[in-house]
Image (cartoon, rainbow, N blue to C red):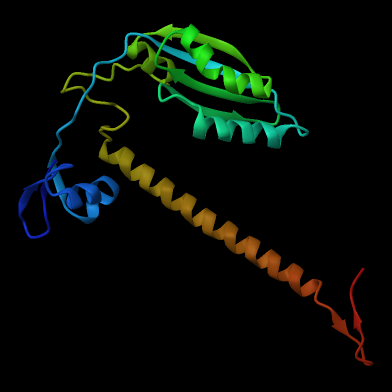
Length: 209
């Protein structure tokens, strides 16, 4: 990557060139300089990717043992081709993720964990790289639009008379909100005074019923 340092110097850094700066930029880039360009090492997308949902039947009695088995699997057995997360609710515990390979290879990769915990694969599907991204996306991957497209929710022309009315309405609502807060504060102070303990002649405290 190319970086402009605080003194205005433009430097290039990588794992072999200025490695100390490269290491720092990977963790806290804004503290060391401004990146003007990146250089990426890309890789060919895999032909097959399999998304999946697996169930782990964890209950109160076996939850500790099941989570321990999951931790051991993630640290010692889980292959690099597997990526997943744990989703837990009051009713169930599931694994959601994706495997760089086909369904048969996925089943073999998850078998050590599922056999130990009694889990099973609920759903799975094999697709390509764009398909895997679309599966986990919450919206369309196609986010292109004409450069001159205007979003009506962002750019809105309001006539001066309407703007004046909106400003007046806003001020009225603000004043009403302040008045309501003041009334609530007054009621709270009144309640505090009413329930304040009264002291009798003999020094004993008497609290109202």
